[in-house]
Figure 1 (cartoon, rainbow, N blue to C red):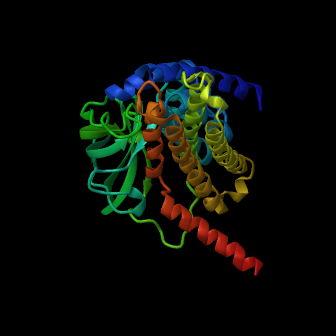
Figure 2 (cartoon, rainbow, N blue to C red):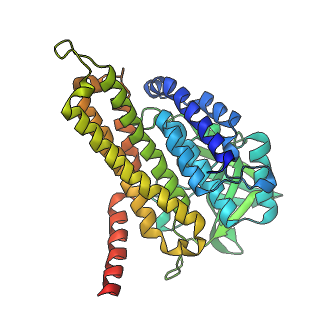
Figure 3 (cartoon, helix red, strand yellow):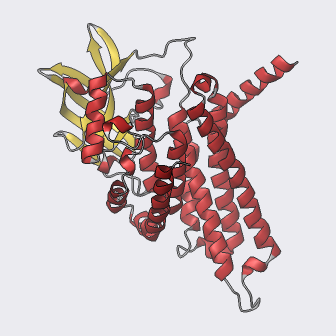
Length: 391
């Protein structure tokens, strides 16, 4: 581990301890944790993956998953918001899909102003954008740029974003295409709807809807274009950045449950027992089962992240490995939070312990792609191909 990363992780542990102190209140109130965003900025984590030549830390995938896992131990909502920023900055730094001057302008704003970014693709009537099709959000050419009109859903960290990477349909010489437009937070006509705080999970993540009414975007912030439907039989790079970042967040939730139950078991001394419940075999078995479940998922996550970083020529063939890491991490979190609740008994239902919140937060991991069924199908096809080769 390099010295810079070691120092970063020390900061993250301190931040996780701090975030844990207010996570319950933000969860109760459904409020966005602006103070956590400020603390992460002060620690410099917004520029973790920005290339060094632009003033960033120049870290890579293994660092990102470690940072997110640790921060999620304190507050899953904050970690999820940073996962969105990190997976986009990591992807942009690695693949450089934008023109060089546009990327340089973004790196400058992230480093100098602390701008956070997240994609805005989903729409209320659209379903998953991964299935292709045209967005109802539109970009219409005007003098010096475009006017954006539409409605976007589930934009995590919306109250804190410096840029919304809005996907919109636009006319390209008579043909409809999908463009990505970097819309500045606070732009006139952009409204963040406060409609997330009563959700089941990650209530403080600000995963709000956003409406856009004649929002002006200058031409230089039209950053990408693509066809409405994916090209058939054209292999594409697996979504390593987003998937592994999500996996790290939910693994951290499971690890928080292990830490919480362990602390509770050491301090809970029933009068009839006269000693901590940590001495009871069934509590030890529960903690052992949680530990081995999380340990296995963590090992796979780190292995896949390291492989992505160190073997770029293998990335095209890593889809099943990436899906396996996400499947294992999210289900490890669900299993561990469930075990913790059972072991804590009725006290686990009380908000004095964070277990009921962690149980709810873990469930959100199932909603991020790839979801369990397609992930298992992908892994199954990969296993069958290996079996066919060997036979």
